[in-house]
Length: 105
Image (cartoon, rainbow, N blue to C red; front, side, top):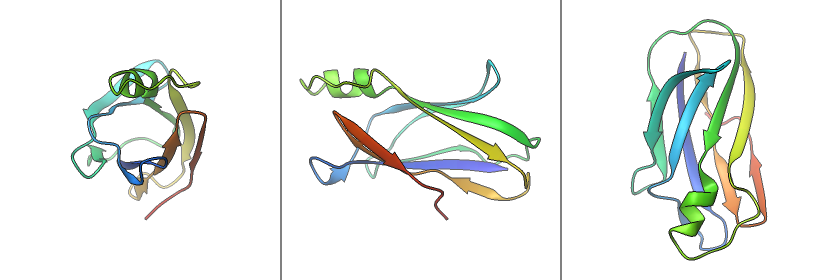
């Protein structure tokens, strides 16, 4: 399984660069990264077991660094891996008071 994400600031209409993201399996941190200038972060390219995983985005710190108060101190997205060899891309569209996500490609 490889896991990547792409975070977009829906208010500014721009990539959310510099946002910390963690990938967890249970309580174990599998990978951690920071979104690049295009808002993208590849967390792992290695095969991983099937099961539930969580992406945890440090949104409160990211908005705070930009002088914006946000309702979400972090956003946690839980997803199931049923095909360990498949790529899992999980985009996040973010604003201070709302977010949405979907399975990308």
